[in-house]
Image (cartoon, rainbow, N blue to C red):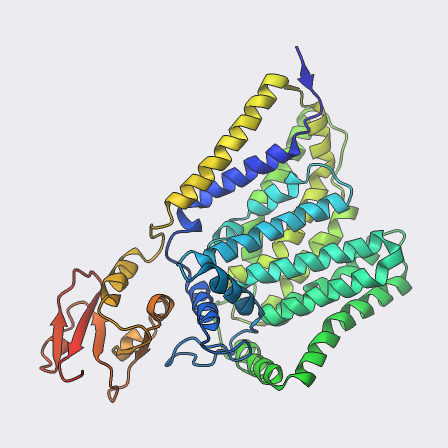
Length: 475
């Protein structure tokens, strides 16, 4: 009988992993409905592509964030190109989000190969096993773009350690991509500045002088482009000053979304449980089969510590969410992968695969991948989130003019996704002013005081959450 040893068809393993990811995420990848933050970013990017607002003065709606300074604008600007070239369909922002995930996964594999390690699918599996990575792939978060830039920075920093003849150029590129990360989500992108320090502590060949030189180069190549930008561009200066004042300082001093500063640490550990379990399983298999291997802590620790550097500074503020730490997960995945790598290589070297089994595995990978693509496309017209709300909104929008403003009661103002969906699909702004000249009034279903108002005529719609009224005296 013919066997193949060791197991080598990595391309089809990648295909299999992509297929599983697509199948798991297929109900959400291209379907309608999105987390509120990602919905707002999609609206702003779509507006920018249509000429509403500008790169440094982003625009959400006439009444909410007429000028958006909550975050730097780079990711919004990049995403606006997707809307410009691919149209404004509801799945365009999800396609952008998915593109960021695939690019980050590709970079993880490239970094693994750069480290001269085999089975580049392994850190990819560890990364994709993190629940937040799946969730973020369909929710258009800024952290997806930040993750691309911080992972690119790590890639070029590692290249600088390997290709010493152009060492400085690679360091400068690593710093430049951190500047791009800052223009996406601010200071949270700077955690790879710790790369030279942690690689110095866990490398026998590194010298302190070299560590200091790399750190200075990395910080300068990040800072100089940003300083030059705000000196040469007054709009950039105004935008970033407002961002730091309203978002950064305000979040640290005034805003509280969690009870404990340690929430983000607990969430990080929780998200890493599947990856940790996978590594532990490899270790237990090794024990059972008497593999004489230990965890490779020395090589893994720099990556794990850099990942931790992306999490720990979040404890400064009580405004925390789990997805804030998404950019650190590629570092954890690579670190955990290196940690368990000796056990993986031992296991893979002992696996014998019959030629027929290999052909079956290849056929299954291709079949599953095609199934994942089909399921994703077949769900393009479905709703995966806010089902009742979106069904109501689509019915209501038939009566509203593009770009108009409608009235709502004050208690509906904090319904942020209502703002988002109406702006995303028909550029509708919401207003609570009693002096508004709005032609339509939107409220929740069966609002007695408006039913009794003689100026308002009820528009009968088969809605389940909202009710639309028309002002009889407005033309």
